[in-house]
Amino acid sequence: MKLADMTVADRIRQIAADMTPAEQKVSRILFASAMVAGLDTVASLAERAGVSGPTVIRLTAKLGFDSYLDFQRVLRDEMEERRNSPLSLYPRSREVLKGDLLAKSRDIFAAGMKQSFERISPGEYNAVVDAVCDLKKTIHLAGGRFSQLVAQMMYLHLYQMRPNVRMIQAGLQSRDDQLLDLGPKSVLMIFDFRRYQSDSVSLAKAAHRLGAQILLVTDPWESPIAEFANHVLSVEVGSPSPYDSMVPAFALAEALIAGMVPRLGKEALKRIENLEALRTGFEWREDGKSGPPAGPRRAARKTKKHN
Image 1 (tube, rainbow, N blue to C red):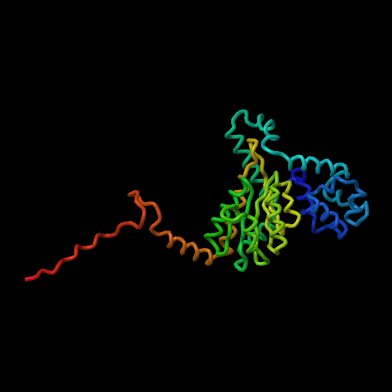
Image 2: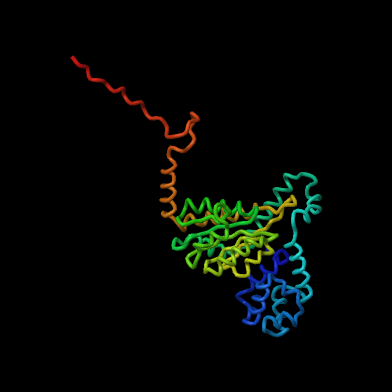
């Protein structure tokens, strides 16, 4: 991925292994503040991180910025993007909606998937697959207003392939109440996209305090959950309409499911076989009737004749 297409968070993760301990302190402050600390002066950011001013300048140079002001300009642009909603994006979409919309949509969605998959490191992808395949852990999934659809799709596949999978969503119990069974042997996979939902952030924070491992799927500007998540996968949301696209998020979910198949192996196969056996008799039949297909008629029972 080109440097210009990367967010500040992307750039930090890319050079994380080459950072000095002092530079790591600065990056931790940036993530802990959802990057807002980067809008402070060099002196203020350095003081918060407990490092020198030159350390802050060296870090921004390593990140590919010409100056600290250039770094702040990019941060401001990113924060503006984080606040965007369908209403604020509506005027921007008018130009896109002209011409061959089907072809434009194809190109936008294809580019979004390509950029998303280039952004995600193989190490982070494999770590998430490993986490959801750990049979010693219970997997919990949650999402926001729209992203819960991606979480639900992940849940339906995970449920078929492994035991101990839960979907956290409002119903007979509130989402908060469903945290009751979370603990160190739990994994919460949560989907949170701009404008990030406060209840999703609170849910993830509570799960983190309970000792659960947090897996976050978010947009390039990153949900506040990224501050304490164990692993973060960010995908593009570009769309021809004013609404953020979930196409790259669904594609990522499909890629994670594909990664689970060889990891779980016979365990998943046996569970799917058992599920198919349970479904026998519930599938649709060509005659339009439910229930198991009719077998050969039994011969009429003969009655014994009395003399």
